[in-house]
Amino acid sequence: MPQEAAGQKRSVLSLNTDGERHPIENSLAVAAIVIGLVALILGFIPATHFFGAIAGVIGLPLALYSQMISATTGERWLNVVGMVASFVGTAFALRHGGFTP
Image (tube, rainbow, N blue to C red; front, side):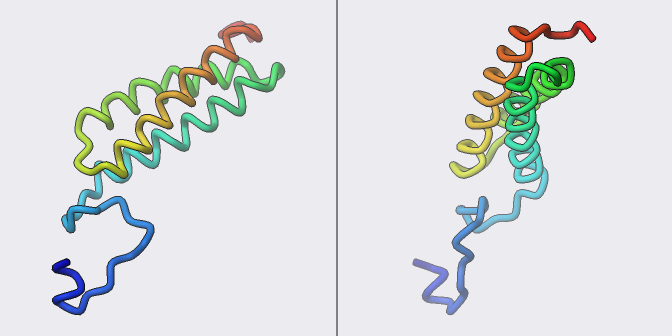
């Protein structure tokens, strides 16, 4: 590997597996998974269905856009998990009342 030949130590937890920096793609991937998990948690709780629905409606298109511009496999993994979490969280939120306050 080139990293070992040059004497550089690569971090274990890195989304930049190709050796290049991708600050925008990394930020969007992390935001997609965080918002997706928030939508999943808030959608699961009946009292917070409104905020879960909003988080899901924001998280799903964000994850889709992030998937479209992603550069590495690690980013794509986070995007897919964020997409699924946003979708399922939105479904739970809609089941519990959706956008009704």
